[in-house]
Image (cartoon, rainbow, N blue to C red; front, side, top):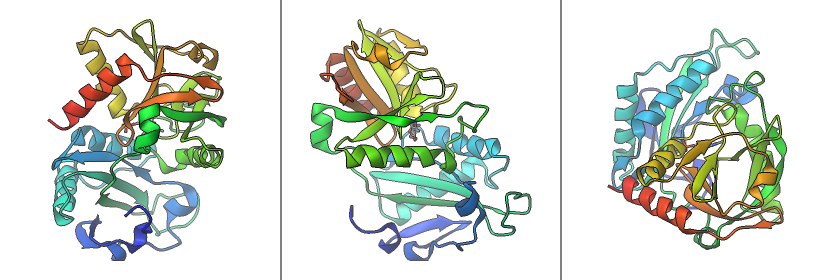
Length: 290
Ligand code: PMP
C-alpha cells in the first residue's frame, strides 16, 4: 500500500453524508480550503476494531472548526457512527482514521461566509509512523529552523491544515538530511513539539513536557501523562529551552500515529532509549489494545 498514491486506492470514503467509492471522493480545484487553508482534520487509530479515544478526537475536530470560525454540520455521535461505518465498509480493524472538514466552493476569496462546510472520513492500513528499525534505536530529530507561532498569530490549539505548512517544510528538510523528523521551538525559543507529535524529556525520573500554549494538546500526550502519574512518575509541564535537553536521561515523542517513540538523537546530541520510555510505550500499547 505504501507506494500507491492516495487517489488510486480502492475502498470507500464517507463524503458529505454517504459512503462513496474511494476514487470518486474528489473536490473541485476552486475549493476555499485548498487556496486559503481552511481545513481542519484529525488523525486517530483503530486497534482491533475499536478507535482509541474516538470521542476525544471527534470533539477536538469540532473545536478546531470553531477556532477557524465554522461549525461542522454533524453532531459528535453522528461523526463517531460514521467513523465506525467507514471502517466496516473498508473491512478494517487496525487502521489509521482521517476525518477532515473544510470550506467549499460557494465563494473564492478570503471571505468565506457563504462557503458550505464539508466533512469526509477516510481510513486505511498504516502500521507504524516511523520505521521499526528507527524506533528500536530511537529516531533522529533535526532542529527545525521554523518556530511554532504565537497563539495570537495563528489558532495554535486547532488541528488546522494551515498550521502544517511549516511542519511539511521542516519534515521534508529533516528527511532530506537523513533524519526522521524535526523538533520545532516556539516563537520564544522554548521547546515545542515535533512536526506531528508531542515532546517529552525524562530527567531524574520525572517527565518534563511543554505546556499547551502554542502546541497541539495531543490526546496521546494526555494519555501518557495519566499513565505516568498512575505509575508514580512525576509529570511537570513547563517551558524549557533546547539547552536543557542536552543532559536529559531519555527523550520520546507521543502521537496517535507515532504512539510512544523513543528519540536517539537531536542534532548532535545523543540519547539512549531508557526504562521510563519503555515502560510508558508498553503501557500505551496495552491500553490501546485493551
Ligand atoms: N502535535 C502535532 C503538530 C500533531 O500533528 C500531532 C498529531 N495529531 C500531535 C502533536 C499529537 O497529537 P495526538 O496525540 O492527539 O495525535
